[in-house]
Length: 180
Image (cartoon, rainbow, N blue to C red; front, side, top):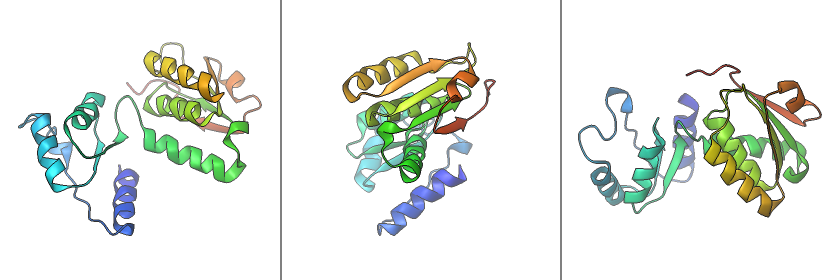
């Protein structure tokens, strides 16, 4: 993604660092070498790994084997940096996130999963409406609800988009029918 790559590269440059790009479009990261070997090599050369890849297990494997931080810039399961940026925008606009209700209408994809987790950690409120057969990840939902019990976040998962947006402070939309 143009935005993901350039914002991470711009951030690194503004902090005085240098970034290196590995293009996975010509072949998977772990196609020729084991992921553990790649992680151990990278940890010797760089201070942080920002990984945008399809498979969540690639990010988890890299984090397991590398001694440097691994940032999930996108996977099929989560898109945490997008959710953080979205909640920063909500905070800029509304202030206290505990009093903000975000409605998400769309496919229960990686963005929806990350919005759930971010909302839960921040103690905010979210209503997610997805088509019945395209809901959020069940484990992510369970994890978000567990966190919400500690932070006071309010999480509702619905299939009616009208109910989700009613009275919401902000509406986030995505595909209503699965891209998959």
